[in-house]
Image (cartoon, rainbow over all chains, first blue to last red; front, side):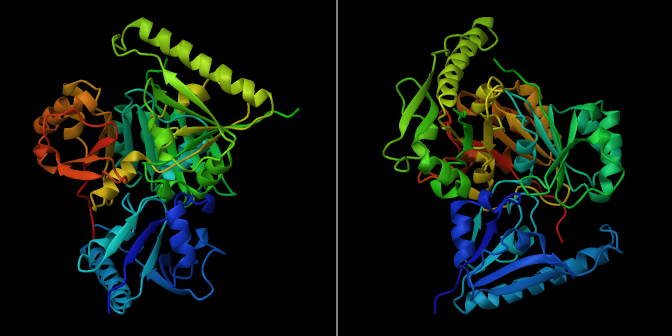
Length: 241
Length: 241
């Protein structure tokens, strides 16, 4: 029996209309659909394809072990996640070896800070195909209704998990800036932007391309934790005729 | 009569299957389709939608004035391009004011170093909508079959038009690197990567997602001018369980 393929399918920033033609077809025809989610949640990626799955599709929810109590610098964090990913791979590999294709749903673009990468690196023994997608940051800067980069602007993409000093230094040295993984890091990101002299030009985009989309000046955002789907954008001001 | 809308439609990296569901529908139904091209060429964006246009679609080719003889630092360069964009806007605005929707074809993502931005900034008096898309760089790193960023990797996006010293400094300070606008700058980009100690990890991706796609180590690429659709990728090596 020939082996099935495991597809890492990028779904884009959230609006199902922004899925690629290819991703749309793969998702609608899939009989085995896998996705990550936090325990007790529906799953962000699963939410994007609501109403699109084939009636005969079987769903494989890969639930993250609870790790918020352990800092990611603790070796146990890596060990727990590593075991979790190995278990996911075993489930998907068993299907593929049985001749079944599997679609793994991925928010954004799978190879850009995506969870699927942790499966991909463990699946080299099987046919795997990755479908790129519109990144969350493209959705975010489009929502601001203003181009993010002009001419020879430098764009720096930063994670809100970085230390404040490093954030501030890199923000000061870049033309355009994107910051992801905000959540509880929003305050640190705001302080770093202020130190870099860029806070006045920073936008907070929540739920880009989704019905709850909201674009506000970061300086005017409250102190709440940023929702999962939120991104900070500072536009470049480069050369333009 | 109500005014039409001017759609800046991102087409993605080149494979028509990677256009979004929304872009695909807009392109197939459009009666007025505009695109930039070099004089005497078919046009990169127009090539992506070959065979997709409605039989009644009228095509509006916006041909760049020849400016290669003038360096872009010369004020005449800006004046010539500015006049050109103003002329394009006049053509599109006349259609929109007559009640016609216009689809402007854009390679990659319109707000990410895109030509459409120069129309968008001159079209604030009319209904304009921008459809984000898969960037050329997403197509390129997917073609390398390896994730571009992990954990809290920093990604820096650089244009090959920057001075060699600045390229080398920024390349040395970033985890993951993308370089666009290669063309005649390929040699300078290669020297900068070498000075930054990153040449051994650099990939040159030509025509990502297209039939002519080619992925080679940059160190092994010849001295030829890089084709229009080519991007350099250096992958980050960040935290991964």
